[in-house]
Length: 333
Length: 290
Image 1 (cartoon, chains in turn cyan, red):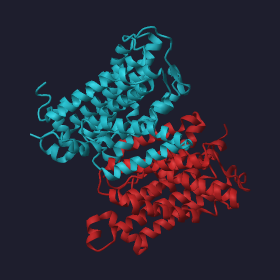
Image 2 (tube, each protein chain N blue to C red; image 1 turned 90 degrees about the horizontal axis):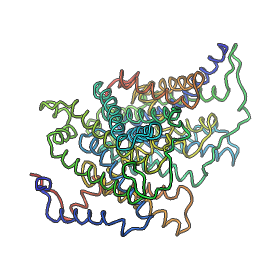
Image 3 (cartoon, rainbow over the protein chains, first blue to last red; image 1 turned 90 degrees about the vertical axis):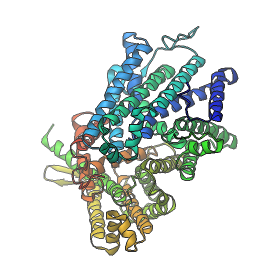
Image 4 (cartoon, rainbow over the protein chains, first blue to last red; image 1 turned 30 degrees about the vertical axis):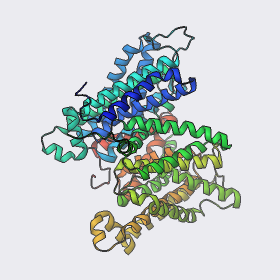
């Protein structure tokens, strides 16, 4: 534990502990609506963290992360519906499938020297390919959707992931904390330093003897596996999957806005970004309704304007700026 | 099916592909010079399409006549965008530019949604159902006009970059940013001009596409993706490449729609894109890899 917090100022540890206490206590403090919003926030913080491994740490821009969410969700849901396999075993299958898919995309791209913008568009292409493919994949419902059985549960069944929002909230909180800890450990490991070297200057990293192909592959595969876990949660929380929804490019974009707004390559960025964007989007609805401006699309226009302002005013994201204000900047040893 | 059916579908796909190619030429020009990937490209195209519809339904102006005026309107919009918000971002990392243009795209799509609603709209001209008979082939007249206009516009643009002093100056910025600054070129103004020209292609293509497909506010992202596929297939930064890519994608989608199901047709475009990226990442006519 001492190693884990090395270099973090005491004020930072205290604030982190306070945040964790608030999050753990939230189900007692918040009403049902707020709890649902918090689940969405934690969900996007988690997926943002997973994406950050690939882009923020290793510098590989993926614009098609929805493919891993979708594959994970469909894999676990198909096992549950067709074979009665529980979500925790389905989770292993989901992670394996997403990792294999990430490995294929990474292998093809990195072997052939596809990088930068080209890599980003290759990831979009795979995600769109999957979206249209699943639209025609009858075994999991095709374009008319794939549904998990919903019934009234008298008690929470953690083994089958069936229960009330509070249970889902704690599952998502546990996942977010785990992802946070994993990223913290990864960043300070040998792999993490290699990733950062590749992100800053790939040619220099290679000339220092780093096997850039291998470490970029690690980044894609780990990120894909982490994202697939979110997909399983998505499937069992919402109980329905539509290719047009889960694989759509706008899902991939939503997924990455949080970490970019929050601060790319930072541990807190995805969390801060998720809070800001989800909070913004939810409160916008309230404000616009109060003002009588609730035309369809009005919310998104203001959302886009806020995005524009943030990205113009804070190019490195909110967290580096906020960390400076709070006095919790980590000392680099 | 008779052999004529295949040829008819092929010619139709080819001509539609030319219009898509013009849209992609715009993206390619912008990327080739400013080095910014315009993630709001398709959304800008929907602006042009809705303008064409408004002009047609309110004033009865034929979209084909409005090709040049709409290119002018989009030129001004593109110039203003580059000069106003994108120029400060040219030295920022790719993901930062990406967010900026995604924000612009979100705003455009939803403003259109507020103004025009979610329903699909189109334009019916007196010559909508005219066709030319060439031997056994039946060719849609609208598509012939649009394809011909595309070729003229692309040729003009190509000539501009090749021979006009301003065009040469823009190419100089693309080849060597620092060198262009050193010889005293106003690079930011030239960037704005380039973005304007790219947007003008979109304006012209939008005016013609409105005759071929229905427009909804949600069409924007699909067109952006299509433009990406085309330029990468043809070669990012290459104008003939973008046109060739457009024709290839148009043909692929038309043929896939005929042989398989129309809803799966864009899967074949993405498949083509993946193949090109793997075996010739710089695109069919692309020269260098960034």
